[in-house]
Length: 265
Ligand code: IPD
Ligand code: CA
Ligand code: CA
Image (cartoon, rainbow, N blue to C red):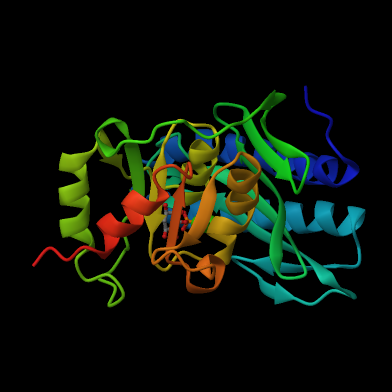
């Protein structure tokens, strides 16, 4: 059983409050699909509204902490050790198209390192959370990464870059190759949920390039508490700084690092 700490309770309450508006707005998006104007402006407003709610709730509970916000940027706090890293809506494109796969992601960095995380999927009412040393949970159930050790049985996920990235010119070829060597490669459109799913053992490994701190902060804390490993794609420790990440159940880390390094030409 889980015992949520006061810190996690603050994060969960903020996520639940922002989710109420998001879910209502998501219902509205379906109606807007058929309108001339389309839902893009509406979704951007929903995104900003969710962020405003999160800042208000987190700021009220911990007034000295700083913020790194996807929409609002960095806000320094009096307490320089603690910083919220927030993505109010991860999976915007899914949301915009009425595809019910998106999440609110709230990470807490302590002294520059991921310390706690909450990822809330309001459609499925799945709350993934963790705090350093306290374990990782889905709602009230303890999370553990999968035990798979061989690529042919592994299910992977990736985040396709929106534009060709010089850091990974052959991403498409790697996806193609790994799709043939594993049980498959998914592209869900929500990196936060991809990390949560590695923690839950639903996915065995995830990699992506040029991801932002707010895509990763909460998920990194959750995966590590669930027994998984997060590095950059070369196996180095600087995953958050580069945004080029490899996230696995641990057993597959070496195999996947090698697979990503292999050239296809
Ligand atoms: C995006 C999602 C997506 C990833 C992109 C992110 P957003 O976040 O996490 O899975 O591939 O790189 O930007 O824009 O929906 O918050
Ligand atoms: Ca995001
Ligand atoms: Ca976002």
